[in-house]
Image (cartoon, rainbow, N blue to C red; front, top):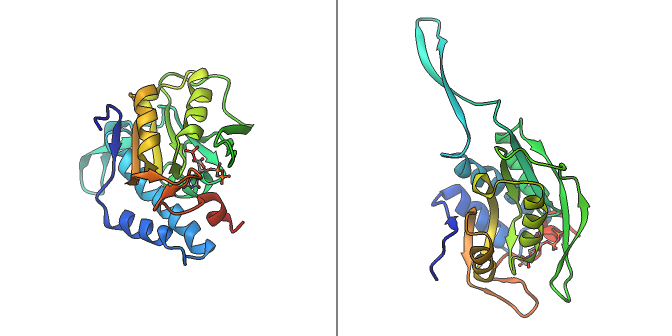
Length: 216
Ligand code: PRP
Ligand code: URA
């Protein structure tokens, strides 16, 4: 499959570790939630490379003047967690990007039709075209929920080239769909799994991320 969209699977021992914890069916909800928080943190860390805007300046150390690079606070930065499961990734991402504005988007997939519907939309009326948006959802299965999220975001002027998507497990059907519809996207994921089962769950995947994170 030749993809135009960029999909990064960082080769990082902590990402692999927490993916393994989250995949294990015997991991209890409190630990599963911690695994999502850690994956949110480390995948965001990887996504920030070459993405987070910086500015060059100097500082005075106790001994001399030194060059310094700071994160540029004047550039708009937003995080959009897709509820519910994206909330667990948010906790980790927010520790790295504490100044980002958070806009919640609640989507739920109908388990019969697999269609996503929106039950909460706290997006702004309009995004500045310079806004860097970090979009969080641990699972990309059929891709229906992500497409619904992207529709809401693009309606409001979101710049897809400046967007980074953070996922834990993505599946080929979702990537194929996104490649056809939104090839300018960049995705960071802990793993790409091949297939979905007849109920639209990623196999081997990690099960229902929202239920496992919140113990429901
Ligand atoms: C899960 C997951 C994604 C979606 C992925 O959410 O967090 O949003 O399913 O499936 P798709 O790619 O086939 O659309 P779910 O609808 O179960 O809601 P939840 O986060 O509240 O559990
Ligand atoms: N949603 C999940 O939480 N897991 C899947 O495997 C597919 C959709």
